[in-house]
Length: 380
Ligand SMILES: *Cc1c(COP(=O)(O)O)cnc(C)c1O
Image (cartoon, rainbow, N blue to C red):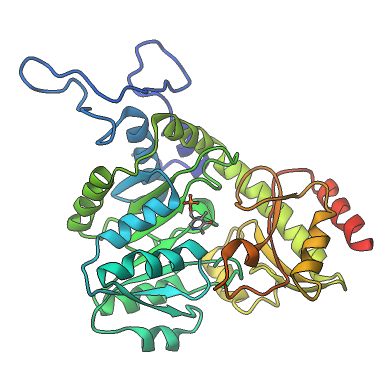
């Protein structure tokens, strides 16, 4: 019997060129939008038109499927396109539970776009199971989870909420962007679909916008077919080059994520002990309200994202981060470079994020340099 490959090995093996006649060790890019048809009407390799499928996308989707051990994967032109595809599988009149603390554009999409198709939603604190139960209605068909959440790093109990969803014949979909399959496996915890903004850690170099969905084995084929149809007919597919970039990123995913986690853990511990920092939100720290759950759900680390509260208002928080040299002030996350941002002003006027909250995406730089940067800035 062949032994199941470890994640690092699988990430290399599954992304190698398949059937390449040149012997190339690196993958080729197939920019062709269309593929030749044979005289009998068939297609040589099954490819017809790139919106439908493309060799680079197929390789990426096969790999994503293997990494999360799902039964089907779909790549999209952005994380939001992947999220929209899930919402488009629902019927008019359906009701969705959305975390009160979630990627801001998810709130915006349900409010500004899907409400026009009579999709209703309730924002819920997903760390409060009684609140989740109370929010479920007869027409609730989806519970959306994001754990740890953005930007407050709240951890929700995926296994328990999946059970609740299934008791009510609702789907549970988990945005696992911040953890990646390196740190958290929602499908193993029973979730129906796992969603990624592959723009972040999968790509890892802040140079490719893309997203993905991976569907679990226990989930209906009906959902798989619906998602495939939406991917093809809505047309928000990634380009072959984008697929190639993400496929390449996957080869070093675990290496990068583990280094980023190590740096984040040390930085969080330092900031937690500093008198100028009013709060550190990071599930790995023992004072975090869901620390125990986090250790069970993410045994190898809770990610490399943290947020802190500093100063009394937006101006003070922004002044502080402008003095950092190695942390670029920019939105987004998950790249090899460290970034900081004032989150509320990026989210928008209805944001519930604290005024003085700074979100930090920790990169792979040497920790001594990163810590020196903060020490210097906080001593000013
Ligand atoms: C960035 C992000 C998204 C959206 O992904 P895009 O690729 O920007 O469309 C969704 N969820 C989380 C947690 C994110 O960080």
